[in-house]
Length: 439
Image (cartoon, rainbow, N blue to C red; front, side, top):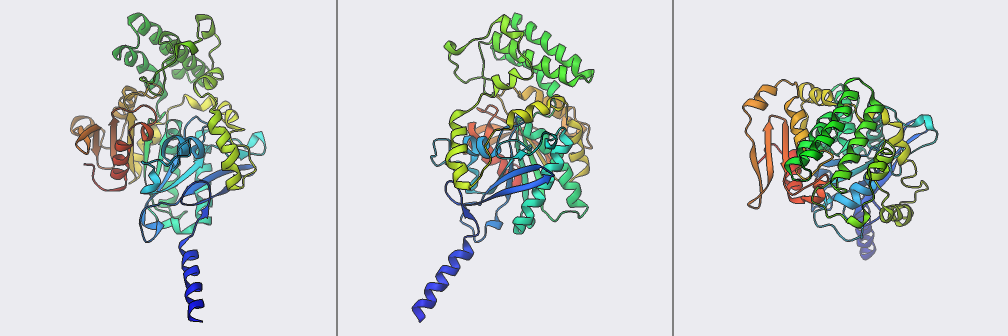
């Protein structure tokens, strides 16, 4: 009888300790859908931390938002950048799951495993996307209420930063007003598409200074960029997107197909197929296909073993292109005003980080919009705050400036995907985000 009691007690302890499910890959996980609006379904996938802790809730929750718009957090962010397994299904040494609970959200509706039943259910504005994300997190808390008190941080990349900034503001206002019980603490904007014009206008000088083009190339790119700027200033957002796409085409032609996400990436000349004639076909649709080519290996993984393991019926990535198409009017709009509100109106930590080898969201453009922000400590930021080295194990991995809850990080040896390119720097940034001091 005593032996039976011990056996039952051991089984119960195991059941109580194992609060997640067996998903795909190592560790305990949970996943599900939230109907954020009628016919609009958002998918989330949680990895509980593998850190040696008494409770999962002792560690912060990191929410990851991918860019695009239309790229999948559960696929690209997970397997290409920071999840426990890489695309070859090998353990990733620097996965965030080792220190944090990580929540991947396929956003906007239609990205990844998220889906809309009807065309009218896709989000058409950044404000709608922020509202959908807020409804998603409310649904997440309904299913896993113990996370309500856990310190939570939104982490983003590229267009995910544009969407995440407004999401953070909406969420904070609700939290501060008592509408939601939660513990949102901050947001990290990684290589974020916050001010498109600042990036477009710094592409030519960036490429000239890095030796990727000569003076003649600079002039051609700068001319195209100025046409983009004119359309932005006129509020002609769709035409601005077309001009931006054309500018990217000019860059690709003159640099023999430079990698916009990391200028040091080796490119095969035999695959170079651009010509002056083909530039005339560069628009907001072809540029999406050109710069975000389908990753067959990743899609086979998501629509094969992952889909089966999670018991899902939706075809991953089936609506991603539609998401991008529907948001054409939004892509070139800035959200610097949202960042200003985060700095003036909230007590959230707002961290900006950027890889110095990124072209699409180049560091010069980020410095421009950051230094031009109009917020309560703007003068102090520009005239008093000192830039210091970001040192990890006696190696300078970058630089940073910090003023109260606002910080910017310049990341060495990294392109657009900082978590993948320089995990040591990224780990330190996350440590600083979740703690009080940056050193």
